[in-house]
Image 1 (cartoon, rainbow, N blue to C red):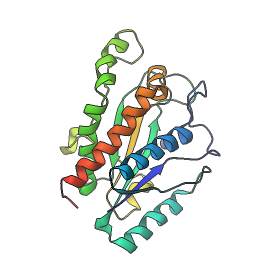
Image 2: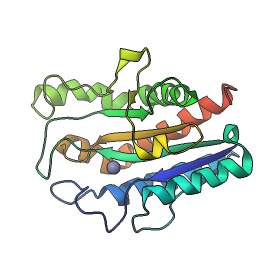
Image 3: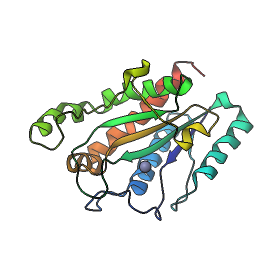
Image 4: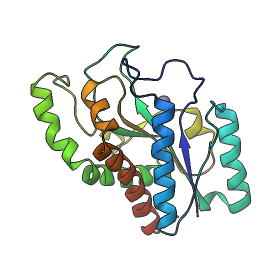
Length: 216
Ligand SMILES: [Zn+2]
């Protein structure tokens, strides 16, 4: 099983950062992806980053790389997780927060992988979930915000969207939005050692849970 970890965007992608520029999505996603890969490797899994480059690699090339592995190893022996941070606005601080994952529309193995990532997020983000309502009462998050964002309209927790990296790749693929880069409280958590550890852990544990479930 080849585990491909994609890190969104590149150093030349405009926008995609916190309003105070303390968090840049491409750099953060790469840092987390690197730690996820290292941790999976230390556990004996065959993991690697899809985009080792720091510049943005077009989505078509990212999908081509994934599908090349699918051709080499068989689609059932490859999974893809694409790591991103969410944003609610266009350059100013916003009140949305929380973690979520996306799959392509319809039920595939990706939905099972996403559900395992959600279970892992519940555990890894326990502290974040605990503090969330306290910060919400202070106004750091809007009143309808939730620490784990879900869409149960199709019976499972993930959101579904026709994102290129999800629909153009042949293997199970999940895109995670790890908190909001334009929410002050989320950015503080993301940039903390505890936050980086939690975001890394949720990806690693979710992937391991999926692989151990024998779905493949
Ligand atoms: Zn992104």
